[in-house]
Amino acid sequence: MKDYIEERVLELARYITETDCTVRAAARAFCVSKSTVHKDITDRLYQINRTLYNDVKAVLEKNKSERHIRGGEATRAKYRSTR
Image 1 (cartoon, rainbow, N blue to C red):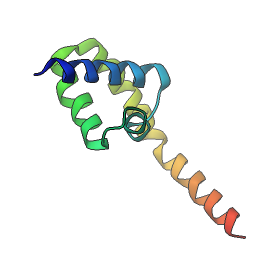
Image 2 (cartoon, rainbow, N blue to C red):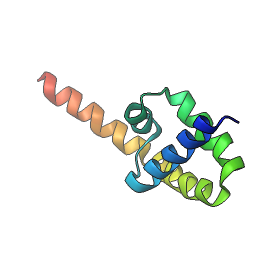
Image 3 (tube, helix red, strand yellow):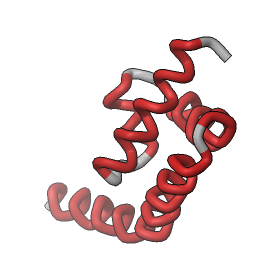
Image 4 (tube, rainbow, N blue to C red):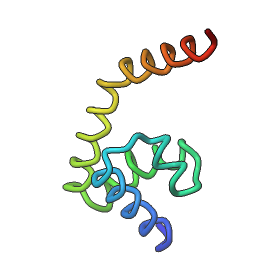
């Protein structure tokens, strides 16, 4: 794996654990695609640093469990703004 990819993976992982952000938010902050972030976090990070991988995985699981709530709030806001 190239050095710049390893650096990006570690930066993404630190950013996600510090901010508890979603994959989309991390992708937006680093100007990369969601699939790149997902590949970096799930596959490459596991090979580089397993303890950091477990921390990031916990954040992503928390975000996944809250996903339906955020979607409901977005839908509510959408229909309130159209009234």
